[in-house]
Image 1: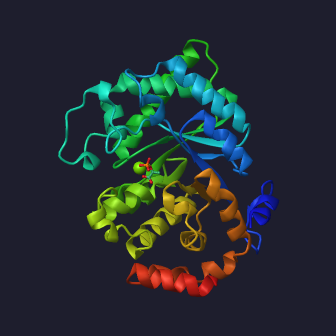
Image 2: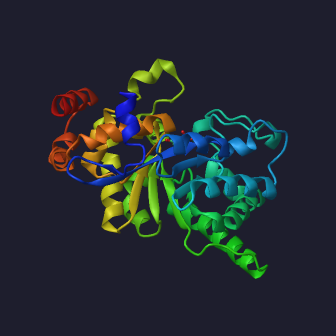
Amino acid sequence: QKEEWAKLKDEPTATADGEQVELVANIGTPEDITGVLANGGEGVGLYRTEFLYMGKSELPTEEEQYDAYKAVLEQVGDKPVVVRTLDVGGDKELSYLDLPKELNPFLGFRAIRFCLENESVFRTQLRALLRASVHGNLKIMFPMIATLEEFRQAKAVLLDEKENLTGEGVDVSDDIEVGIMVEIPSTAVIAKQFAKEVDFFSIGTNDLIQYTMAADRMNERVSYLYQPYHPAILNLVNNVIEAAHGEDKWVGMCGEMAGDPIAIPILLSLGLDEFSMSATSILPARTQIHKLSKEKLSSYKDKLLSMGTAEEVVEFVREKTE
Ligand code: PEP
Ligand code: MG
């Protein structure tokens, strides 16, 4: 099996009938890039920058961040690197910020909510990213976007820092795509409105599933409700993909679901463009995709979306892909 995977390391990712998709990796640190390239990753679909902020006693400086972003971009060359801005809160705590304890941290003051209120922290990160942008193919992504206003505000801060840097004579790339994570149901529902303003979407199913099913992703008592193949999730994913394609924008997925062998045929059927997963899942996923027919899968789309339970979905996919 390993040999079968290895043969595809430098091959593009395409279905048996020649439809190309992109297989990229989720990373947490610049050191992860070695594994991404060794496993045939076509870029980075999610760089979780919070690791720069965790396990320390103070915020990382602009220089520290610049060095990390530059290291990632340089190693990946002209392939895309999607960097997500700081996603603290929820299960990711930063002791030195001294944020008050909350009753429902996953529904609380986290990610973009924190960044928009602590603008100096946000601006430091954006400056580091903008300065690093000349070293590769950078895309910037905002996490936990629930409203259009949040996206507009975050983008305005980004453009303001870009102008500041240019004014200081610093080189900044002119073609940085700016997108959002779709991990809150409100955003998935009005994806059409978002699609007019963002450059891309990346669906964060780890959170999207917990918020849609109202089932804490860390709570084992309710893990039976944490259902990636639930038709509600598939319909939200489909809504995001249709909205994006209607505006000629691309859609990725960076939650665990993107690397799941049961989910992959479903996501191909719905038309997902980019799959971001742990590096070790890339070659197995490419091998699986090479054997699937996009045309055949697409013909199952309406049926999948109209099913009533996750169980029916799984049974159907198993039967059709055997
Ligand atoms: C997600 O929510 O699906 C995601 C990729 O982000 P994280 O797991 O870091 O919350
Ligand atoms: Mg998330």
